[in-house]
Amino acid sequence: MRKFDGDKLVVATHNAGKLREISALLAPFGIAVTSAGELGLKEPAETEDSFAGNARIKAHFAAKSSGLPALSDDSGIMVDALDGAPGVYTADWAETPNGRDFPMAMEKTWSLLEQKSAPHPRTAQFCCTLCLAWPDGHDEIFEGKVDGSLTWPMRGDKGFGYDPIFVPRGFDITFAEMDPDKKHAMSHRADAFAKLVRGAFA
Image (cartoon, rainbow, N blue to C red):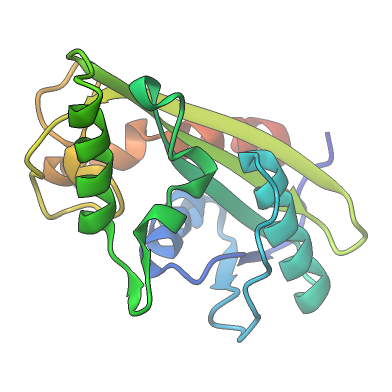
């Protein structure tokens, strides 16, 4: 396991919500964080069919383009009754000609569950794979998840993505209704980050 010993890191994302969440998780380590979007880097095509594969594409592209270590996150929601869909295609389900429309994606997901008369609870997992890559081509992978179930209609305005319909196990509110600090402490990203910290920063 290679340790991270620098003081600057590129987060390979153009998503402001994801950057905020990752920056908050890295804040205690005194690491200066910038994003691929802020550096004007392109978004590479995500051509793999796994979270780890796509995370590697993004992290290595950002590391080589910036000359700095880069951290990428590939995450999505896997719905058990939909055989794990949308999975790595979570963001794709939200794509429109005018940008991403997650309410549309959530409606599509719920409609598919209704068409299948999927039994309740409609279990799902948020999954996150982090890839920490260096400009020399080395990388380390860390995976996290949080279990829960889907609800309808959408509830809450504090999250992003699928948060308004995801109720984490043991709770009766959605991620989008939850205080952001509480969500960050238990999310799939927090789970993966705990492994990253133990492996690369400890």
